[in-house]
Length: 404
Ligand SMILES: *[C@@H]1O[C@H](CO)[C@@H](O)[C@H](O)[C@H]1NC(C)=O
Ligand SMILES: *[C@@H]1O[C@H](CO)[C@@H](O)[C@H](O)[C@H]1NC(C)=O
Ligand SMILES: *[C@@H]1O[C@H](CO)[C@@H](O)[C@H](O)[C@H]1NC(C)=O
Image (cartoon, rainbow, N blue to C red; front, side, top):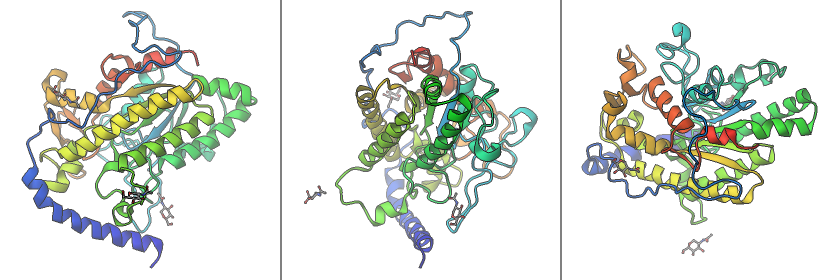
């Protein structure tokens, strides 16, 4: 048997073990209860050399123009930020990559066309880019002619994000572009920029002022069945899954820093146990079931370790600046009181993948089984960009205003 055959076999084996756990999960399943998430320790603001512990009052008041936008945004991560990288990815023995290239994806996007975004309209990479002064997310890496920018004029960055991507290469292997490959792809862009800008010095200047956005909100590494090998051949290092993931992420971010990245905006894992895809593993197809509290706790554990990782990196790496966007906290706050932010439904998918989507899309949190609606993405981006509660130790706006 070839490698992929073995893998496919293991995936099949694992799926049947999921069936066996359904009964247990059903017994312990509770109604949507976000108050009982004791694994989560919110990341306290950490004092870092050259970076104040708490954001001072916003300098710009309403009516004043925003700070100058960064020269570019480089976007990494999962399907919540993908703007078309998965469109022409080829499948393999494991199956086909997810592609948002058909109706009703993009129903609210300009022109009503599918654009590769896993949303009814714009996604969170677009709204963060808009908040920073750009028109929308920079283009998908795989949509560029030659996979490279050909001139600096009009260059706003590159988006490398891919649906189902995890921090580990093994996560949804062969149906996604994992984070390590996304960073390699950025390496190609970087070589090209160095030539276009005229050398290492202007390149480093350019990159040090740019935003490096990493979105991990869908928590792909943590989803059951995303890593079939992990349960069959557990590593013998006595580390927890979260320890392994954060160590690997630390290595990846350090690599990016070595390539010239200085300003990182990082979106943590959301309430992944409430995603309709996960609810549907244990409940009826399409979600509407209770949240999986164990998965939410796992996300909270990961987020707590991520906070520690970033403050450690800030104390070690030269001029490393970051804003940790708390997607988990933002989701929790919204789910606790949906109507306060205009949501009528924070449980089910507006669009199931077949049939028609719901008509009141702006009142839904989930667009499909994994990803949020345009409206949820817009509100989350605003909270991370200029809010005070869900981005630490500073929000994205302050991060951009910092000296590069
Ligand atoms: C989620 O929201 C509830 C209700 O506001 C709050 O009690 C709880 O601490 C929140 N959990 C997290 C992880 O922020
Ligand atoms: C999956 O594997 C096949 C066969 O090796 C390969 O052609 C394809 O490019 C791979 N796709 C991804 C997304 O890795
Ligand atoms: C893992 O833990 C076991 C039991 O405590 C110990 O015998 C073993 O040496 C540990 N392995 C590593 C790599 O630390």
